[in-house]
Length: 245
Image 1 (cartoon, one colour):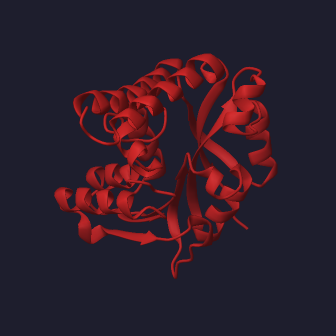
Image 2 (cartoon, rainbow, N blue to C red):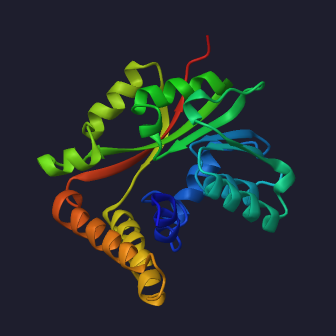
Image 3 (tube, one colour):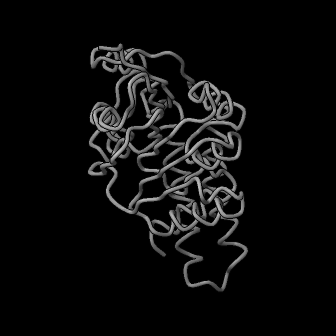
């Protein structure tokens, strides 16, 4: 069982691959789509859940997503067909860091995908290349809510605290205009859904060759979360703009 399939099974009950609830997703999309007819781009879109939510709520929005996973893009394509929005969604299978487009976008999204660019600021640099004048960026990334253990840093990488994270973004020329910090409830709900969905699939399919691997992956993830980063890792969503020249 490959990593992509494990992730798909783990997100079955929490399609947004980030610790955030549906109401907060709705509020963020309302903030970044003030006209309702924007052209939007998701860099590292996965299964396209942010794009699908926007397409469903705003019938005049046009969306594009970039990801290296054909399976995730196939899911997004099928879901858009079910919504009757396939004609408003374009999907590109390629490295998001190297993606180029002939037109700019009113909104550029990148949630939980900063690793694909080498960090938060390189992610924002990539987003800026695609941004229309006056456009917005919605980025989601981790931060240390409390001092992390060495094991947490080894597993998850280097983050700063929230204030330092925002300071770095501002120093890079961006102005935060709105945001959302994931609550403890949202973070716990996401982790329980991740581990529980995967474990439930394994228990429901005991004869599948991947069942034992899935059960082990769920147990490993659950132990890492509870023992090493539940009390230290936070997650923030920032809506950013740049001053006009």
